[in-house]
Image (cartoon, rainbow, N blue to C red; front, top):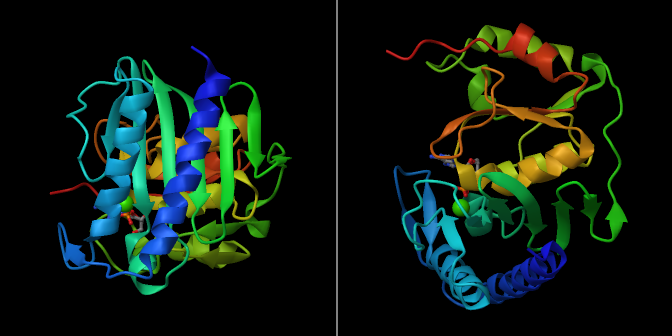
Length: 266
Ligand code: 2AM
Ligand code: CA
């Protein structure tokens, strides 16, 4: 497989899709809810996913597409070449803020990530990696993550988890928030992952992510030495939703051991 050519093609369609999404702000965006009132989808999410499917199938019809909006074929295994796509990650930001939403794509061959992309559509900023060759922020190579202490860390976490909830022990999260230098919450998992791999955040914690939220990000993570696991310290399960912690390698285990205590689901 010609990875360079595939990378070139992926970048072209991501940039083109980004332009289409920015142009959509001049038209009507139709907003619907999915699993609940805060789970949004728009016609633009669907149109963007279809755009990717058409382009990829024309490039190589044997490639399969696992997209959040489910417009590709049903993907139940990661055999062969699979593109894991979130056409808009952070749909609430897209609808409400008109910024801070990402296109994110991971290309997997027999379950192994070979290309990863996170594209900030409004800033036209691209974080990407080619497995084994390194990671880049636009044209600049990204550095390996450097040692740091937990007290110096800035972490991404949703404020919900600092309040009593049935997923994790919030008292431990309060301790974590008091220990670190600062917290942020951006509303796009892919954006928070892009920030961790480029050292703008030192960890990001989420109770429930889907394969398309992280498929691109974990490929980039590997190249810069960021560690990405579920709360058990195991690799994320790509065929379902899972808990997720991505962090600077110097604090990943420490966060898991000291601050994350999952509650048993009834
Ligand atoms: P989305 O905007 O593509 O749905 C914070 O809301 C982050 O979690 C966003 O990146 C969002 O992606 C993702 N997210 C929202 N609801 C989710 C769900 N039910 N399962 C997995 N990820 C979800
Ligand atoms: Ca999405």
